[in-house]
Structures are given as C-alpha cells and as structure tokens.
Image 1 (tube, rainbow, N blue to C red):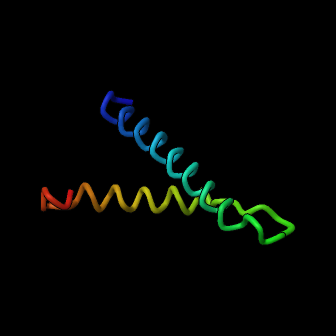
Image 2 (spheres, helix red, strand yellow):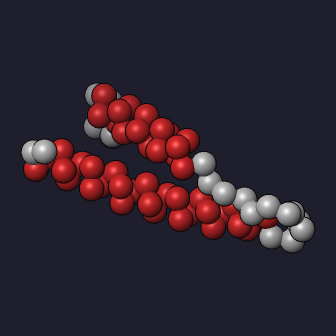
Length: 67
C-alpha cells in the first residue's frame, strides 16, 4: 500500500475504535438498571458502514466549511 492509503486506513481504524468505545459506554448506560438477561452490544458492522458512508460524503463535499 502507498503511504497515503496506509494513513487513511490507520485513521479509520482508530476512529472506529473510538466510536465503538463511546457507543458501548452509552449502550451500557442505557441498559443499567433494566435487569435484562443479555448485555447490550454495539453492531460493529453497522458502525463501520456509517463511518465509511460519512467519510465518502466528506470527501465529496465541495463546501470547505461543511467539510
């Protein structure tokens, strides 16, 4: 892989890990006190898909302020 692609992949992996941790904490807070039998878990595939879609939209955005 070229250096640019490796940097983008590294960034996306780190960002996905950060988002996963945040979402997992939020899921735990939502579950707390409900007495459920199963632990809430974040759908990692959905999270990665959303991150990918947002990155594509960001790269295609012409307006610098929105970007």
